[in-house]
Image 1 (cartoon, rainbow, N blue to C red):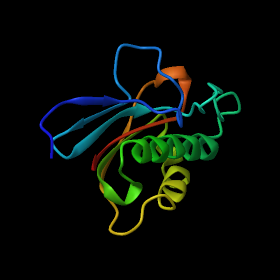
Image 2 (cartoon, helix red, strand yellow):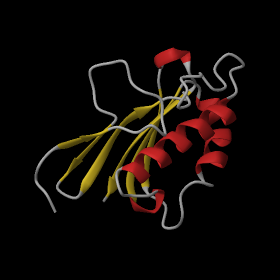
Image 3 (tube, rainbow, N blue to C red):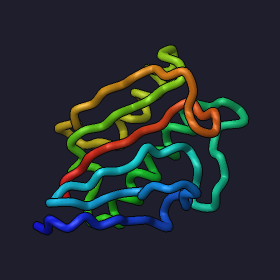
Image 4 (cartoon, helix red, strand yellow):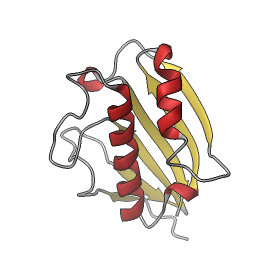
Length: 130
């Protein structure tokens, strides 16, 4: 394990246009920034039609691709933070979420927030093992 902080970016997710890293590898852990429903070509998936199911799938596909580029996987995710615009979407988000993580599922926090980037309905960040 390395104690050197290493930034990782991926072509499997949308490029970021802000002053932060997509992921940081440090001491055997991977810290992923909050991910919104933007595909690798920069398309805002499900945002115009306010489709939380499409948005959740895209967010989790982005996370999956970034984890793969970090040498990890969804099976190694330890902690997830989910930010949602409307707690009324909890079940729809949960139904999609459950299909991406094998057992044992990671620990998780889900919080309703006033607003998210791009006016999306869901943003997810996580911590994984390498």
